[in-house]
Length: 71
Image 1 (tube, rainbow, N blue to C red):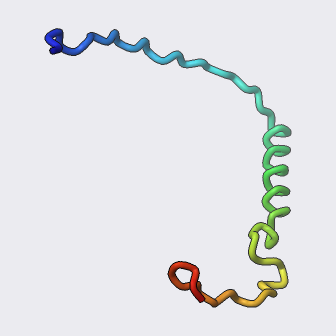
Image 2 (image 1 turned 90 degrees about the vertical axis):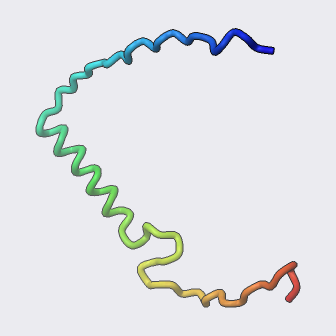
Image 3 (image 1 turned 60 degrees about the vertical axis):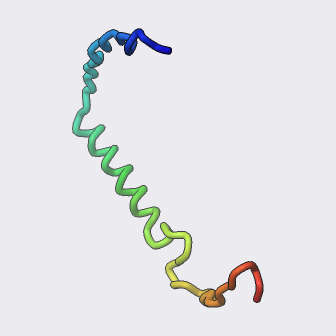
């Protein structure tokens, strides 16, 4: 039998907040935005797995399997 009650847990210390200062100039910001825009443009229409710029060229898979693998 347990007759001691619940154990006491000490309070957690407050989280430490670190302040980071980054000196960003207009050139750095412009370069970062340019890189993001180039990456977004590179995805373009080729960004999905199923399609290409020419559309879906394969036939649709419409056959449905039945239960327990019987056809």
